[in-house]
Image 1: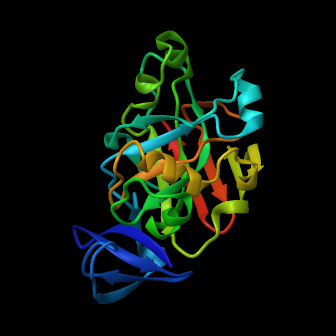
Image 2: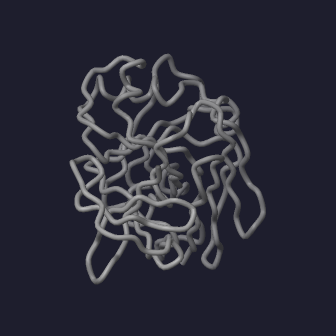
Length: 249
């Protein structure tokens, strides 16, 4: 099942999509809902499929990326937050701040929380997950270096594109993840290359903070991160999940 969020008749609606249609539903996918009509997927104006109360990101969760960035592996996951105002949807514009020439792409698999999650085990985390989507942890690398931490560099409006939908029926443990800029492949890895898998990460984060329905956990980016410039088109493609495409302005 693919959970989508879209503009429909000057309103924002949730729906369930297949390869050709969207079935509109009466409420959020986390609540009891009823079907309320069908529209062609080709006519659906998709937006960010969730509205998170928080976006929890995991740093350095692929060994090759750790080498690339010159980081040592920590005994526990390193987590940080992006603000909900950074959320961007499929085909949304990534806005480069005026003072910068470039920002970096970081293609990632994101976990969508489906129920209140607090101090769960890795095994129990599976039942707390609604599904998965593509994400781009956009980063102003120059500010990251200046600040010595990540909040400002990753917190600008539009710096968290997610989508195109939430895929609920997939095993996240061995999926191919690729990032393309202007059609040229820049990142390629499998989620099996993660240091800690998505269930371990949800368990760890839930021991720090309570996760609520719609919250996102970004599971880290593989090696190959690099710059995007105004006029570029970036695509994060994950096997079995979908393709997230955004333009840079």
